[in-house]
View 1 (cartoon, rainbow, N blue to C red):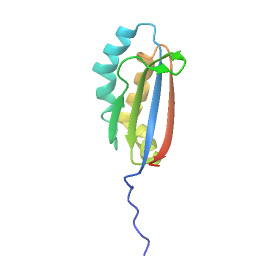
View 2 (cartoon, rainbow, N blue to C red):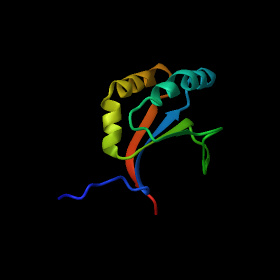
View 3 (cartoon, rainbow, N blue to C red):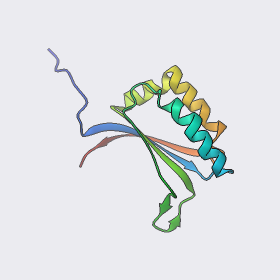
Length: 113
């Protein structure tokens, strides 16, 4: 009998979205808070959703990044399933409506070290 696998606490998967500086920061912030967050929170399998607060800096100073979003799931497979769902398709289609500066999206497994 094959041993059933459960996600371990120290093994998760994350999406990190780096939203570059938009043309209108106030409009971005309003839309993101009122429209995009509620959409993204409907993603199946979403465990945690965190965003940066205040300016996003680099060791050298300003970063050119307006906002960082970190969405946590149990696995990369769960992320793929979430974005294949109707909720995921709606969330992905929403990004161009407010991210006028563009966005980099990174997906990866994590482990505690």
